[in-house]
Amino acid sequence: MHAAANIVVGIVALIHVYILVLEMFLWERPTGLKTFDMDENFAAATRILAANQGLYNGFLAAGLFWGLFTGDIHVQRFFLGCVATAGVYGAMTANARILWIQAAPAVVGLVLLGFVPSY
Image: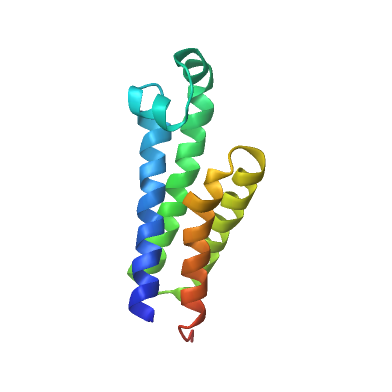
């Protein structure tokens, strides 16, 4: 079960690295415009906000990678909880897809980590 949990934590971390890239570097490019269903004017007006969001997603990824590399399940649980909370909030306030893209994988990771003994 521990290996499955580590795989899911890694996937969630990689999702957040991808979100960082989208929000910080691709926001105004065709990939970002299509992913977030926005026009060029809106993207230009919100690029600083998007970069800030991307940075926060990077911090979530860094925390998850930290938990993986140290093997600290408590760190993994904390950051998965942060991801799940952000995903639920994003789904309620921005786009319901965020629940499935961000929150659901984090919850799966939390469930799997629930089967891993912590010392």
